[in-house]
Amino acid sequence: MYDVVTFGEAMVRLSPPNFQRLEQAHSFDVNPGGAELNVAVGVTRLGLKSAWVSKLPKNGLGYLIRNRAQQFGVDCSHIVWSDKGRAGIYFVEFGSSPRASSVLYDRANSAISMVQPGEIDWGKIFAGSKHFHMSGITPALSASSSEATAEALKAAQKAGLTVSYDLNYRKKLWMPADAKKIQEPLMENVDILITTEEDTNIVFGIKEKDYEAVAEKLAHIFKFKVVAITLREDLSVWRNNWTAIAYQDGKIFRDRKYEVEIVDRVGAGDSFTAGFLYGWLMEKDVQKGVQYGNAFAALKHTVPGDFNCCNLEEVEAQLKGAGLRISR
Image 1 (cartoon, helix red, strand yellow):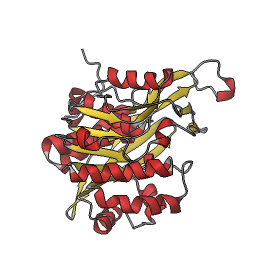
Image 2 (image 1 turned 30 degrees about the horizontal axis):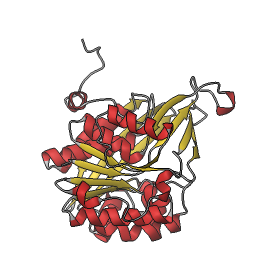
Image 3 (image 1 turned 90 degrees about the vertical axis):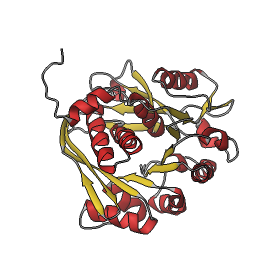
């Protein structure tokens, strides 16, 4: 039915224009987004069929999130609609060196934090589907969302789907000890882990001499088929180096480093996941996954909002060494 199914929270992002602080704002740019929804949008932009599963409130903000996702071609027919709870909101202040950008969350009592095990018909959703993706944000929202996460991961593997999981640690949602206690058992049902060196150290306490050793140790401990680690070097607030590596069966897969001039970096990691899944699912090749993920993530830095509005043609142009001349 679907190439990729994702499950998680989406929020409404409000950003003051022109580098304003929140206390200066008279208006906001409005962009829905969330890790798993960003991935669903990303794989759809690359030509795959995706579904995003969530729980949203029956109000204008819930409909805004759904409508925007549908505009990008994501199947939203499995959303659970609720009379209780709310849509989370988060505010992004864009900084400029030496002031970093910052995020303020207002997400307590969101509808998806009230999701219950048994509320979603995973058997129906997964029938005929290929791959399932989640992140560590969803189990951090509440005890019931953690249980629903475990249920979804087990159902995906039972249905024969491959499963990817982005560790995506958020210190404003839970403490490292809780993140480890809850997520370690979940890893039994994960084939592909996507993470950063920092998140791996915080959650699992794994710190090694280099990224490659971190990936190898993760694969050894949790029996992952693939471990991918994204690598960001901050040159300034608006200029970064970006790349990634992956580990599979004792081999490290690398790609070029992209120097990116940033319009909006939110969602870059999710774009890596989307690109990696495209390369891995379509080409059956981890190296292709790293290359597509890397290029798609680099391109995400160039567009505003959480969603990546770039497409497969632009990704493949980057893989061929596209320059900066105007495309006519």
